[in-house]
Image (cartoon, rainbow, N blue to C red):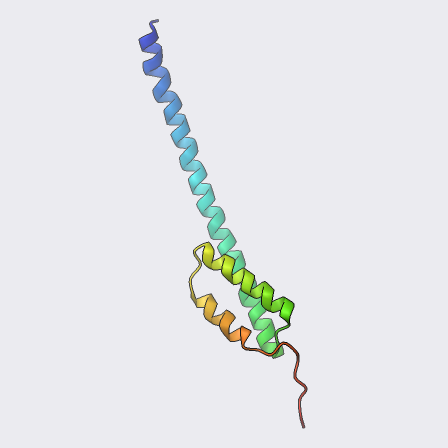
Amino acid sequence: MSLNTIINWLVPTILGGLLTLLITQIRQNKSLKCSIVSLLRSQIVASCELYNKAGYLPDYARYTINELGDNYCSLGGNHGIQELISKTNQLPPIKMKKTK
């Protein structure tokens, strides 16, 4: 077997394997990103609904919801969640006492 035959056989085989590996990694990364975006959206919606029902938003929760929203947008999430976060951020930081 000549060196030229080995190179002609080996190079395409290695490059084909590397390309297949790269495509698989890209698909897996895309799936992971979509999964993380879905989990973030779920967490944001659940937290916002909880605090909107309660009528107040503590500072620690405000920070957490804003961080989740920033991460959600940086991963390509839509901006509809930002409206929900903005509405929730308008809540007072402490629970207001009901007056009779």
